[in-house]
Length: 331
Image 1 (cartoon, rainbow, N blue to C red):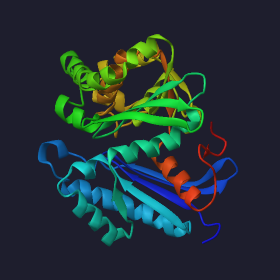
Image 2 (image 1 turned 180 degrees about the vertical axis):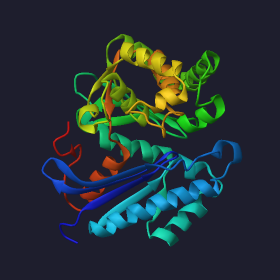
Image 3 (image 1 turned 90 degrees about the vertical axis):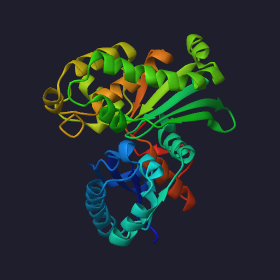
């Protein structure tokens, strides 16, 4: 349908997200969005399967998405499922159930494609003044880190990626989500650092960081939440958070403050809330490990990524837009 909007759906370990957009000069204009914490990967690390209650919650949220697709008259959409469905023995069966009950079809994509889509969505936040970049995504069930190089002919290209099968949900289940002990926090940091050490050794990233040749972009609920907390926002505001900067000393201070709080105190913060209160400290620990290993000094916060990359791809396939474009009015 000519002129019909496009849609992208991202089904992760923790969240179900939808973005509906129309092509616009320089990128696209968002006309509708939906996000719900469904915890599809709840207890997945312990059982190896998606739990029935988690699947039911997710299907309920996807019925809402299906209604939005119909009401907006979406012409083309793409739904992708990531780590929870990749890991689960019943991931394929669940995707089939979703299609039968909601009419929405999902592809279970591999980590490499997930990273490529995230890069497409975040590319406009990378600057040209440094030749290398670290892009990371702290998810519910996995953490992806990508090493990028700037190429004059092709823009930013992926040199290498690593996908760690640990994220905020799996860590919170292992180390607790109420009061996290100093020992538990340190164990999370040490585990991530150990898993990233071979990646660091392959590319000698720390040396390039010391030479001032590396920038960093983070796309995840962890970094966007920390940005909102650092700004002391009365409520989360994507327009203020997306594209903002976090200095590493600010990250350390916020991490310390949040780790010292209990669940109730974290849940009371307007940028965290009860749905993330048990997850945010695990995210802080993962981020802490990344920052210690590669002390770039500051990072760019991206409240964008997979869905935006999907939308840009759909629009290019339709002969609209251009590579490297982004949200209309966002930079």
